[in-house]
Image (tube, rainbow, N blue to C red; front, top):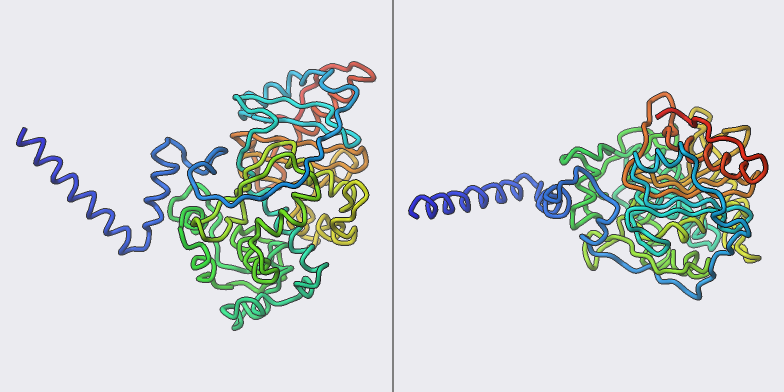
Length: 395
């Protein structure tokens, strides 16, 4: 009994010491990380982690249910697609054709109303909010300096950084995009309860506006600018300009750093496959939603066009690809979240899941992207010629 008491006493002393050291060395955000992620056996953010954080509601308006295609779910997923769904733990897969749901499958207990984390698909939403704020005159242009809103960036290289640089991933900010390292800045940003302080503590270390470099901190700073410019929380502005007029069927949740804090804007909208897909429809129609222009077509075209010739795969918040002889652009998230838009064929493909395919330095588009597109086309082709499954892209 004495041994147990002594052991518990020393355990408490050591634990207290560790916690004190975390505060001394300013890594106390790891306490939240351990509680919400690591002690659950996860190594990074996961689909349902929104339940572990404070959230702000993105309110819906009057729902506008999707049209259901006459051939809805008459074709089963191909063998190859089903294999990838199992391997990468897909929870939702939709094919929208001519603005109607042509196919949808759900797995792992998820259904059409199940919320899951968008991860970096949220970056596309934030960029849409930026262009809307410019259209409304609340932000002057893509060339307006960030220092107009945050004087902390009024000196040195920071003085040249524009809101357009933030949206196009050309900010030059000091940032480490290592998701699986507990000591990276992106991990701190995910778990810290004062995200604004983290972002305003960044420095501009490379010349802005000269080259693409994917940094989540740039989107977070952009969201802070939008919030200042509009006088609304990001969730409120997105609700008013997109969620309500697009007739989302469910309200969404946007993770915040603190109950009264700011949205984790570079990620973390919790919504469902059908509602995420509406952004695909909006951009397929060049910003027009059922006859109402929510974004000017010139804004949409700017967002889905590369800024830098050396980075033809990225525009302003959207990924871009020319594949199968067609221009495709898409929203993308950390664990293989996709909303893929193919305007030539009036098709939107949405996939949500637990794992992402392989991505290499030689191809900015992960190999699961090709599977989701290839197999969708094979499924749609079956309605006409009943071709076989094929092999898809190797994984």
